[in-house]
Length: 580
Image 1 (tube, rainbow, N blue to C red):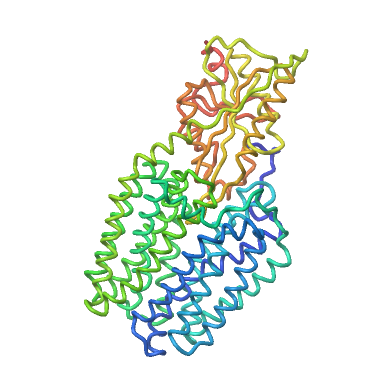
Image 2 (image 1 turned 180 degrees about the horizontal axis):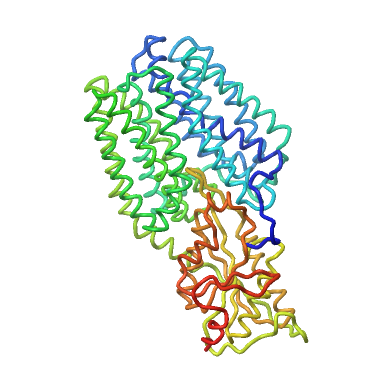
């Protein structure tokens, strides 16, 4: 949370390994949008019905779903890089084979193989980027978010352009671009350490015995049912060329990316996870009902599909956060369980929609999709209290035992102070070289105000769209606090330690800290300057700014090279005068 004056970390100053995987992520996120513009042309060229063509989605997603149960085990045994490389190679081979196929059945089969490679890739890509990043995980997350936005937005556009030449173009395009990403990954991504113990191959299924994870997973299944119904069948009533469909889904993709990265966290901060999801699911249901009612009017369908991107972006991010909050198991296991359920919903939906469209008309599957969005609301309500309890557990955190004091004459931080039951000064610490100076400044503030000192670290689970990854292990988070407590004890300074947990961006971490400060009736929270540049802070919000907005106590910005500077209405002098 601190950096040398005048210097900020840039998300673009990353090792080649990060850039290689980020490029592969762009191509991966292009995957579905790349194919969407060619669905009508594919049906016409191969003399297939929309229901037959929809199986391209079903085979891809169902295989992805089943594979998600095992990729965690595979990655824990053979390593993240090997899993990533094999996944990319599988995508290259099966995308190329799909382009050479002369029948719908052949493409459906090759898309199934593509789904296997996709599962191996998406299960490891974010973790590899975070593990390979330099200068903190914030910049790596921004690159992943940029890859997401670029892939979702450009995929349909490129698919439309290549599809206007031939329906085979998008398949060959993916194969060529993924081959480039594969070569870069092999060349630049180093071997990463394996987990201390392999994940059990049946752990994801066992995890579904937990009510919270199962409830949120079923909600995700219902949501993805409606989502992939729209994605698989909306191109037909639009009656556009491949180029036109590419433009429509590019507009849709831009909204998905923008609302996933920028707006979802801010809506969550303002209204809470569950209320935003309730409103969002109802909004998606209304949009799908509009598409169903206006299936004979291309303009209505086009406008509704583009607008749905905003709701989908919010839902993708907050659904993943809800799952990760309630899951009482390790993140990789929770991700595999969640991925299995959501991809199963996405895979079954196009198949069922095809049968319904053939027998009852094109509007019927959209009405069913609207119904599944709406049905997800009471399912979420059934797990609402579990979500609330999970958020409260994150606020409670884990206490870190402080060592016995070893008084040292002339301690720079001032020695221990009599607390007398006074409200604590909390200092938020991160993993950077300025953290000790931040803690020392907070210790002086605690001494001068007669307050106890509490060292707090927030262990973050980063969420980007539908992917989540722990930015550090629980042991690493505890070690970050213990190191400060040991150093303070050697100086004769009394302090306690706390590790909190958060799911989401930096602003979510700051809200967890602010709630903790309110619960313990803290006198002040001391934080350091952010080492993240303005671009990163705009995308991921500033920890310090978000803390100031949400905190009910004084927030003090500590610059190790200057005296502490108060960020709120109270001055530092007023803060000291108000000490008990």
